[in-house]
Image (cartoon, rainbow, N blue to C red; front, side, top):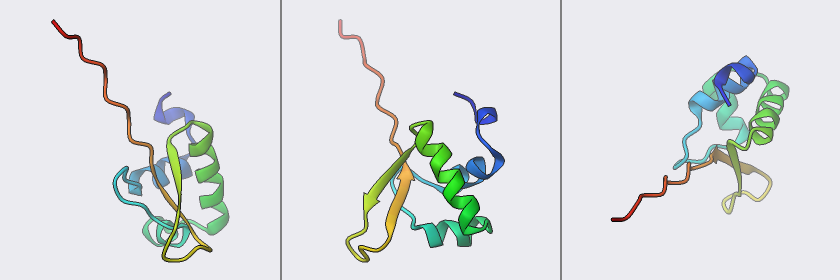
Amino acid sequence: MTKTELPKSSVKVLSVLDPYNSLTHKEIAQLTGLSPRTIRYALKKLKEHDLLVEKFNFRDARQILYSLKVPSAPLQATA
């Protein structure tokens, strides 16, 4: 999958997400300047391409935390 397959809004959201730090919908909106509806669409497309992880927010159960999926480490050949 390449970035050209994603809508521009998804690429913009992808640029602010980090696999080790999670952001809420509101934080993504503040960082990207995109509307909430556009962010929902972008997150949906990222989920469809299996690039996104949704986590439960223990500080505020009304919000979901989003982060990039951590790529699995490639298998190393042993000698």
